[in-house]
Length: 474
Image (cartoon, rainbow, N blue to C red; front, side, top):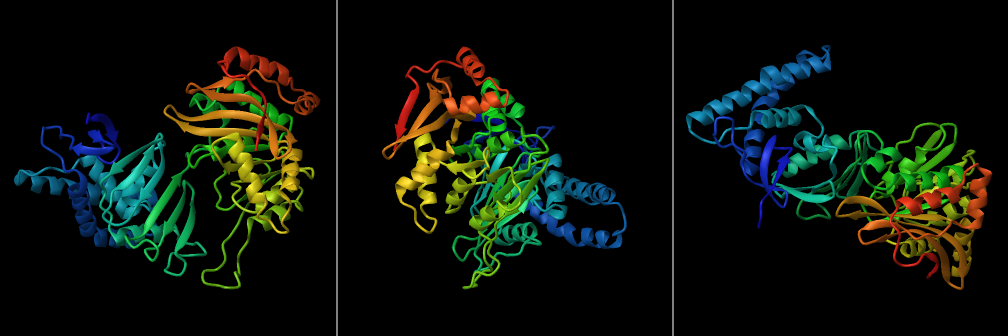
């Protein structure tokens, strides 16, 4: 297998990678080999153990000092000498050395930071996911859409130590009874499973967010969608107040696109956001609500706050637009009702790779809500919502908008969808179709010429080979 070169954030230099895993250690400046993989992390752990008591004593004695100054002292007077002393001993024995920059960073991180040796991943803007599959197993990282393997031999105590720090202050903690927890971190959504259900040890999955929320110009710059398509979506959602379903597979960028569209709203727009676990970061007049699971082991489910209850409550708080962070249950019915009762221009994200799949999933989820509504009534409710469906997906080139369609009618059990943009030959293509007359009128009333935008898309976006038009989606 051909070796691909890359920069490994943990080793602090260029490494040869095979499937994202370092296969040779980078040389030191004098040509000496450097420690890598499990041997490197074993050495780091040993130095951390030797320094822990001294650093804690220093922190106890300097509680009133400036935190940044204390960190500088720890780096200069404890960590750096420890790395230098290790390398001096290793050099005398003609053994591989520690990479000074990487070792100083990792030792300091384990001593002082909640993310420990994982801090480099949290700080890398290209990393979107971190997977810890149990003690002694590789840590897997998704960087720019590609999975990488990193041989970081975390012990059970280290993994649980991370979980304990992450869940500090949370209402639920990880126990055999409460065998799963979701933790909201300023930079991440962290989900952990207890070894009671994962016999191989505790399991942690981390979804990272960008340090600053991305707006539409940033997504255009990253290639998620062309500028004219971004302006078209703003015209539909912000100006014409069309309801929007953003669909895609897990990790495809649904929430990222929904957040960018929401950040295009005027600051005075009163938006009420409802999420199972908070992910959206909005400015302006946004009220954010979060559901809560029941207390662990409580048959009466005390403390539980469901998404359905929050959607119903949102209607009493003067929201102009309602946002369901991710529609995954019976709250879909309440969301559809809200969209039909004066909350036009609302938005949700839904799992699904195609327009038909997304519409079918919303119908299925809405059917879970008691009292059970006949399927034909649910489909009519979705048609009245007249949503614009935007599909995003992971492609070899990265996250991309792959389709835009508008629900314009219902024939029997099939939705009539006007396809405006479609994915062909690895690129987003314009079908040449217009928006519906109802949407055109709503945009015109808001002072937007959608016809001109559609014509501009025809000129600047590649044309689809297959004809557009209204298609039935069962």
